[in-house]
Length: 438
Ligand code: GAP
Picture 1 (cartoon, rainbow, N blue to C red):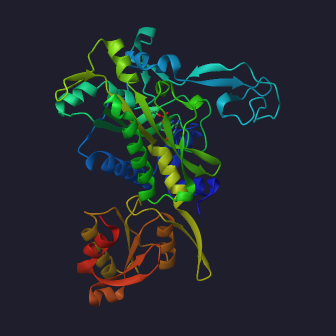
Picture 2: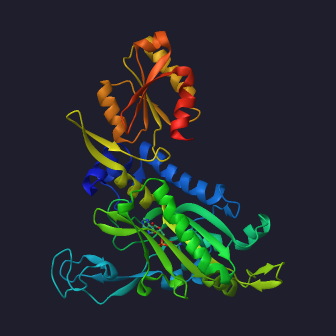
Picture 3: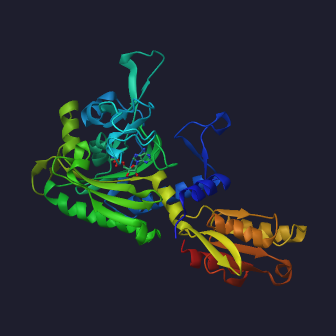
């Protein structure tokens, strides 16, 4: 089971995962702030991606490039000329739409009128601003619309300094900005969002094989983190959907999630060919070719790019983990998040606020805190506190009761099975470590 849209948006706001940005001023459309639980969940998603993509491999290194780059980067990459969506406006109600996203290209989904759209106009999605105190055309810079270009422009810096040999990848996580015509569906499509991208450079002859390898690796990442197979779909792009850089014979493979409104993209794996490096060579005059000392061959590498959205994927994990269950005649809501993603790993719940229990609670908290994100909750009945932790996906609750004062043991409750174990406080870290697996 997965949550429906309103339930998850409501939970996200109520429990402090995601807030509307500038809420006290009426909110800024399409901008969101991540609250105490949301920031942990988002960080965990990014951490899992970084761990498997960079840390666990010796052929991928990381980078963190600037959001503001020389405008020449975007001329070379083709974004200033071609990073556009077809915009139509309804003459009747003045609403604006992306033509390629309309179910019916003639009928306005806002007012229902037919034949009222203006001719489509290509609208560039780049966010513009000015660098320095003077607002002139000479000072225009753009917020990056993808993290990828900061990788291409540093290809030679990274290859040389990290002494990388082909095939190798450069990974980056960071914010990107697009002036989307129709942002919406909560954090699914926003104008400011976070991406997790990796450019894998290889010999042109190896590109097809590497493309296959990375589609498998990326599929398995979602499955390994517990996303349910029935809500995942993997799909090759149709030719008319290809991005401007992927039209040169490459291809794109999508990871899609069954969102409440239907199947939609989480990630694209693209064969970008040598499009970007060639473009930067032509535009900058720098030599970004690769020399293979073993074969004495000089060539421009091809690039396989898995590009995922961190914020969008976080939303999908939240939807996917949501379950409502009946237990002993009572309803419980539980986020069955993989423990690696759970914002809080262990909640420590003293049965009462009596000082002697609080003292033991503190000792338990001190023992766990260096290792995991924990929360101490002393309010309300124990049943309510369990339900609060279930609702935010906490895998384990540790209850400190009056017996703990005598036997130095605590009760550990498992989120999914709700089974309870009595564990000596001295063994708690290893008990939880075994079950969490980290
Ligand atoms: N470098 C390639 C690239 O940027 P993309 O398919 O345009 O490819 C990659 O973006 C991923 O970034 C998407 O699959 C999606 O998860 C995320 N993304 C793109 N636009 C977004 C938006 N407006 N809001 C949230 N996430 C977005």
